[in-house]
Length: 184
Image 1 (tube, one colour):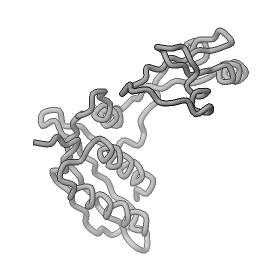
Image 2 (spheres, helix red, strand yellow):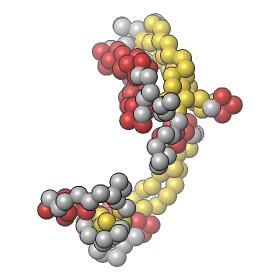
Image 3 (tube, helix red, strand yellow):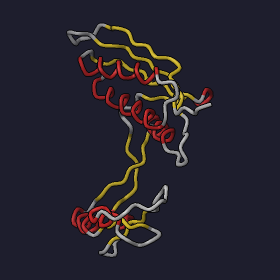
């Protein structure tokens, strides 16, 4: 049996009158998300969208940020070689499935020296998580236009995939996030 990363349990949209000439859609989608990859992250992305307050990091000193950014290098944690230099020089790939990455800063700065952690209010949360049923709901009114029609058609296509992998759960995420720009 194949594993699937999401399942759309309910998907409906109806034409609704609006101050927009074309009207709007009242869209309701209920779905489940499962992490099927070795490194779990998709379900948490959806859960983060449901939070009233979202964790964030900000920079308060742009000069320090520029110094940090300009000194940042990405290394292979096993070999200590620069991954970008290996890529530019066209070195042969080895047989490792995953390459452990380590970020270092030539200027001696740590990320915590530059970024301040905090919270921002999630003003546009159209996602709800129903813990009792372990499912998500995305419900809102959206302006009818070619973009929202296309996104709805794409969601219908995603719904038809028999065993969607994580790539498709990311596509569902981006489709729903794109709809947020067109709410009525």
